[in-house]
Length: 423
Image (cartoon, rainbow, N blue to C red; front, side, top):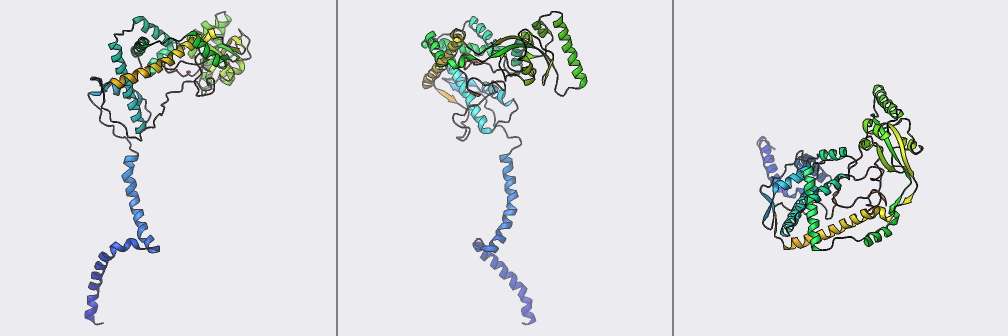
C-alpha cells in the first residue's frame, strides 16, 4: 500500500464507523450472551439512582402538602348548609393529637365526620319539625349522670382539660341525645319491660357472679422508681406523719383525703372491691393478708409508699336480679335506641336532598367496615367477662352501656389498680 492510500485510511475508518453506528443501533437489543450482559448491565447501574430520586419525594414526603381547605358549605341537607368550619373543627381535633395518620385512613375519617354532621342535621330538622324542646331538668339530670362515670371531681376536670371538650359541648350532646329520644318515643314504644330485663338476666346469669375479693383503701405517698436517697427519706417522713395522724385516732379516710397523693384521695382512698391479680404484686401480697379494719405498715411499689386498710372481704356470690335490673334496663333501652335511630335515619335520608362537597376517597382508601378504635377502655390486667376485648352484658361487673359514654380515664400513676367498677 502506497503512502497516499495510508493517508486516506483514517478518514475511511471514521466514515465507516459513523455509518455502522446508525445502521446497527436498532439491532443491538438482539445481542445475546456475554455481549448482551456487557451492554445492558451498565444501563441498569446508571439509571437506578435516577429512578429512586424520582420516586422518593412521592412515596416518603417529608411534609405532604395538605389539599386546599373547602370554604363555604361542606354539604347541604334539604337546602340547609353545613359550614366547612364545623367539619374542620372536628377533623383538627383528631389531627392535632400529633399521631401521623396515613392518607387513606384520614380520608376515611373525614368521610365519617361528614356522615355524622349530615346525620345530625337530618335529625335536627326532624326534631324541629315535631316541635320538640328538651326541658332544662333533663339536661341537668343527664349532666349529673355523665359526671357519675368519673371516680372524682378531679378526674372529671382532668377529662375536660385533656379531652378537648367543654361543659357546654357535653350539655349540647346531652340535649341532642334527649331530643332524639323524645322524637323516637313519639314514633313508637321505647320502653323496656321488667319481663324483658329478667329474661336477659336469666340467659346471662354466669356473668353476674362476683369473684371473691376485698375492699381496701390506701394512703399513697408518691415516689419515682429512680428516686434518690434524699427523695426516699422525704417520702418516708410523709408516711410517718400520716401514721402519726392515725395513731392520734384520726379516721383513715380523713387522713387519706388530707395526705394521700393517689387519685382516690378525694374518696378517702377507697379503691373499691378487687380480686387477686388486679393490683401490683407488692400491694396485693400485703392487702390480702390483712384482717378487716387492719392498717398495714408502709408498702413500697413502683408508685411509691402505701398504707393499706382492708374495709371488707367477700366470697364468690351471684348478684341478684334486683341489684342489676336498672343497669340491664338502661342497656336494653340503649340497644333499642340505636336500632330505632338507624331506622329513622334510613327514612330521613331516603326523603332528603343531600349535597356533599368533600371529594370521595379512591376505592383503595380504607377498608369497608373497618373499625377505628379509640383509647383502650380498660386498665391493663382487667378483661371483662369472656376475656379481653369482649363487651360484658349489661349489669355485669365493669360493664358499660353502649353509646353515650365518655371515654374512660386511665388510672393515674399511683393507683395500684382500677377500683371495682363503681361498687
